[in-house]
Image (cartoon, rainbow, N blue to C red; front, side):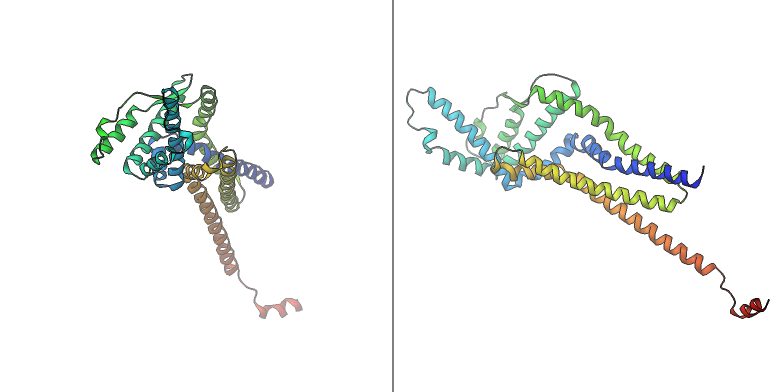
Length: 308
């Protein structure tokens, strides 16, 4: 095989490998980080201390409580207090916001995230159809136990009832399952294919040092493109929210879930640039050694050569 053909084949293989790097990292993140319940709960746990998340939870829970109170008052023969009057709403909001700053809320937050993740993951893997629901009884039981341990009055009277709450509609489940099946395969084969193509491209190259440098720079570029994609995805996600007040909380959730992927992106950039720099330094050292090993011409012999 000629040198030109080898270099062309090497360049094609290395370019394809570097193109697969960001997609492989994304698929592996979904398969081995986002799908794993333990890692998901660990990533979401610190958000229980985030003020934006606490505020969004308080607003949502408070609105749900007020809706329930409104329904009961509408069916009562006499409604001395109306939720729309604002007499009850401030007390409910203050009570819920105070609860979000307690250890019981953090227990409920972790238990709720685990329950939702388990329910969605089971539905994706079992192939079931229909709306995905979560039973809140286990979450309520953990909160009740936490409040009882903290000696909160009347905590032991909290009813633990089986209540199924919908978390994912049926049509979204079907669409999500298709993507999950693809990513489950791609999460393993894309990184393996990228590594195999890079190794083959380096092996067939006429100058392997240049091939390694190109692979390293392409890997760094893939990591940078992944960071740009994450930034664009964050902006589009927040822009698609109907309520602007909940965008800080949604941004905190997005950042928590993609923290591992951002770390991987920076590692790809750092590793790629480091390897490229080392290849450049070794190339310069090799050139110096060859230059110092070349014997210099003897000036005393120049006149003799000229007379000859």
